[in-house]
Amino acid sequence: MNMAFDSSVTIRSAVPSDAERLSEIYAYYVTNTAVSFEYEVPTVAEFRCRIERTLKKYPYLVLEKDNVIAGYAYAGVFKDREAYDRSCEVSIYLAPDQRRQGFGRALYAALEAKLRAQGILNLYACIGDPIVEDEYLTKDSERFHQRLGYTKVGEFHRCGYKFGRWYNMIWMEKLIEST
Image 1: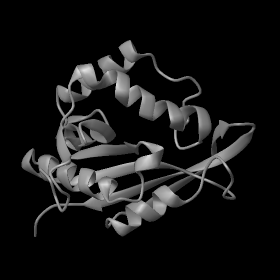
Image 2 (image 1 turned 90 degrees about the vertical axis):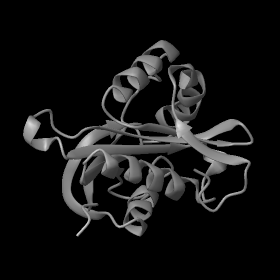
Image 3 (image 1 turned 180 degrees about the vertical axis):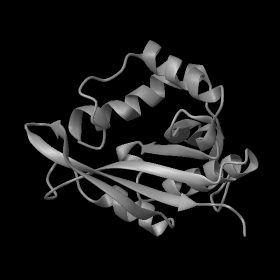
Image 4 (image 1 turned 45 degrees about the vertical axis):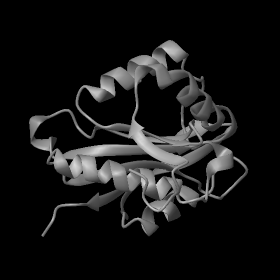
């Protein structure tokens, strides 16, 4: 799937051998931001397990630019009960130097198409939200999701603690059921 990009950009399903590059991308968010509330970067082996576990039920996509992975998006369990099988949580990470090029929009469009084909109709994004924007967290993720049709449906206050300060967390949703 090339969306509106030239042939140097492709989107494909992740494979376990992508773990090293995906871990490199994710490491930036763990060590330099409050986008992820993890404190330690997962090992490549742990990342490989996460990819394998996700692919058992959900899509896990990577976007390559000039044969180098520039970002990835995946879906996961929203709530582990059968009644929630038509809902999932979505996540996306782009290499910091690959942001603001339309790659996030392209990855999410591809992810939504795959989820819709699986009968998943409700998408949820759990997003770190700054009490006051700072050097570790802005409202960029919330704005990005809003532009893609997500709406804020919940907020948890002072629930994430990282870099010696508290952060809120918001839930955003997008209903993709065709009407």
